[in-house]
Amino acid sequence: MADTINSNENTNSSQVKDLIIIGAGPSGLTAAIYAARAELKPLVIEGYKAGGQLMLTTEVENFPGFEQGVNGPDLITTMRKQAQRFNTEFLTEDVTEVDFKNSPFTIKTGSQTFQAKAVIISTGADARWLGLDSEKALMGKGVTSCATCDGAFYKGEEVVVIGGGDSAMEEATFLTKFASKVTVIHRRDTLKASKAMQKRAMDNPKINFIYDSEVLEVMDVNEKKVTGAKIKNTKTGEETIVPCTGFFLAIGHVPNTKLFSDTKIELDEHKYIKTIPGSTKTTISGVFACGDVQDTKYRQAITAAGTGCMAALEAEHYIASLNDKE
Ligand code: NDP
Image 1 (tube, rainbow, N blue to C red):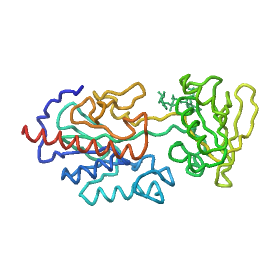
Image 2 (cartoon, rainbow, N blue to C red):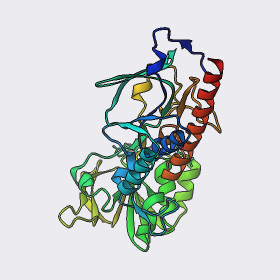
Image 3 (cartoon, rainbow, N blue to C red):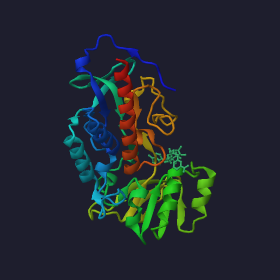
Image 4 (cartoon, rainbow, N blue to C red):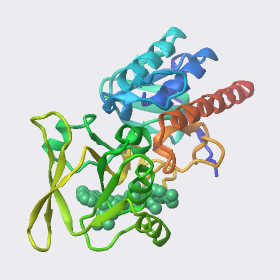
């Protein structure tokens, strides 16, 4: 699967970094901690949206080691400080261009050009949002894109799930463990989800479905909490309010891989980076991917951190093998 790399003759080896990590969510920061402790002096180009999806959450109760839970941005700040303690360098700029054709690899930001023996991609994925002002205003106050993370906050309450795919079915089913009632709101009259996932959700007495409906507004911005979803039937034009205290988005994720579209890194049909199963190796030898940018299944902070650790260990072995050849 690995691609062969040509040597870049024009490189001044004294300027070549061992490792550059692109992205600084839980996967990139964990990779930095491991790589820095292995004395690789990693450079993390963290981007202007540093921290990833945890920056949009409030309470994180499922990250081990925090008995009372931890605030998402605080968790990121602590991980970043931990990486800095072992001499990780950070650059708060977006990467604008990568060239993985030759080794060492070239990475450009708005202001600088770097070269590195190995690269770890941890650019994450963003949940897709409806784009409503009210949705944005109530994010973290009842509006969320992660049922696994936030479902337990809605014990005995009524919630809605937006979407008609496998994620919506899975999240709705999961939420019935806590919520008294789950309403799936879908924009069309047929679900996109697989028949098996549909059946499981439809057979669950706590789940009901509203079809042909788009969300106009998440209520109530003035009260600073979710009290309902104002929806419109796309066929009849009728507007109704579905009472709820939790508003769960499940309309897909978008991996941050645009930057790599001109490289030989193989992406799957949803544009996630393909890695060799059981590893973080991509189709280019010396380029590794970890976290949500390569994970269509788990998408948890802890699994992102786990693959970040794997990427650092694999990058370390790769760099050692290059050094042995020199
Ligand atoms: P999908 O892209 O499959 O589904 C997204 C759903 O959200 C669709 O029903 C879509 O509507 C709807 N949607 C998209 N944009 C909007 C919008 N702006 N407003 C309203 N509705 C919108 O994403 P998923 O996250 O569900 O799944 C992603 C991939 O992961 C799939 O391949 C899926 O099979 C897989 N997966 C598998 C699971 C499993 O097997 N256990 C669990 C979860 C995901 P429309 O139908 O009209 O396009």
